[in-house]
Image 1 (cartoon, each protein chain N blue to C red):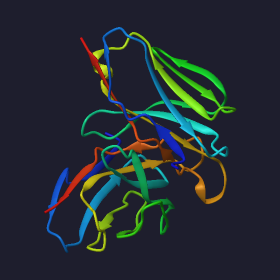
Image 2 (spheres, chains in turn blue, cyan):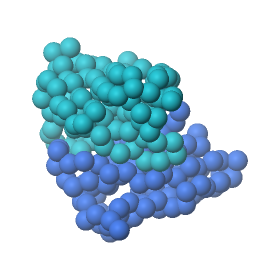
Image 3 (cartoon, rainbow over the protein chains, first blue to last red):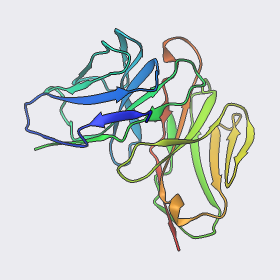
Image 4 (tube, rainbow over the protein chains, first blue to last red):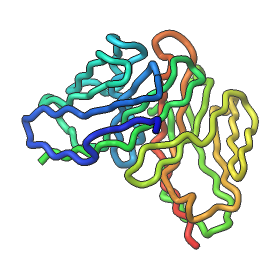
Length: 113
Length: 114
């Protein structure tokens, strides 16, 4: 089956700890994205990557880091510097180019205790 | 002011009703417009994609774009309980490093009751 997988589905973390969210796609997409979703705020872009070994900050990159060492994978690290990390995190991917649909994964719900 | 404004609702309608969902935007550079549907605790899925002013129809769904007024709408005819979800508008523009970068509205929560 082709698609985007995110793991884990639910994640709990203590304050002060870094945590890494996994995102893998087998759609042969070049571009990958990370969004954060909070109630009443829609989706906000954290980081995006158009090609391997290159990525750009989105609108709310502070306190997050990413890597893009493989085309299929785009992990997101939520660092202890992120002041309000509890949220629903969504990964997406697409072919490059303006007309290409972004396909979303099922999301990871992160709760900081 | 946010670049994209969407009434968060919630919106509750009876089965069979016509639903109208709306977004306004301030950035006149936006050229490409999308509507996503998101079921509870799931990732969004693309419903409609348009890039010109006017109407685009797909089954029970019609997307409408008015670039002069910076206003887009999604109409759902003969609404069903299975349409109950959050609907997100999204838009983007061509050029440079912004390729593929979507700006989303806040989402409208819709409930269709039998």
